[in-house]
Length: 294
Image (tube, rainbow, N blue to C red; front, side):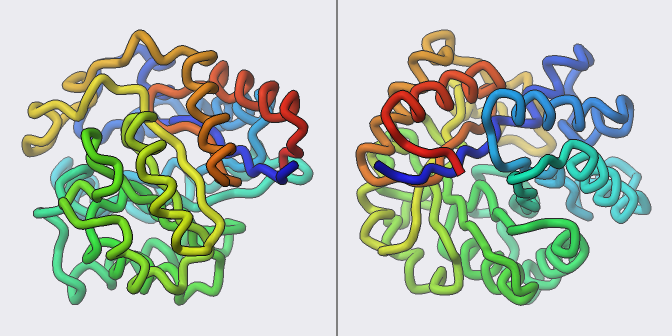
């Protein structure tokens, strides 16, 4: 039997659902501004469900996104607020993963800046959040260039770096850039673990055998969207352009996760539209199968 790290589920969509407000391009960041304390509540709910990792609500706190909303001066304050909310929920034998999302936009590798621009931006975030975290998780990485820049920046902090790749929903062996997953290995030597995230559960299952070839700890946390719509790939999108899958409740999602564990995954969890009920079902199934959650 294996020791399984159980990540939390999605934060952004959970915030939007609980707040009940109309989504904005700032997404989870706006909810944190308007409703302080709600992030801590969600962290606690994931811990209660069985998660051992709290992922900070820092995914979308980038200067370019804040500048577009006219609040770039809140860059440091927003990171501090997200870290504080995670720390307030912290419990014994749990860890805080500092999230760093993509620059410019998610799922759009063609918009990712060159290394000379991207690395300093990622470095600024990594340096700021690292002292409050146990590890850094670089999320929704859609290309080899993106992987190279963000691993370079995050590794300099000295914390373990988990690299989470987002893959083509129709062919989980390829990044959203069209590049094979294996092409990442050469630029991810300093990553402590490789994951697949924010892709369909089916695509994650296709891609995990490729990650296994890296000989690093690996795993996945999928989303519950029907697809990444054309509307979400436009400039300044809002999450109401995405549709939740109705066939991916806790039991259905857990079946995928247990199949990933059978493939050798030791780090599992959920991304967008995967909530505390999903994590609770996963925790129960993982323990029932004889594995330990660490």
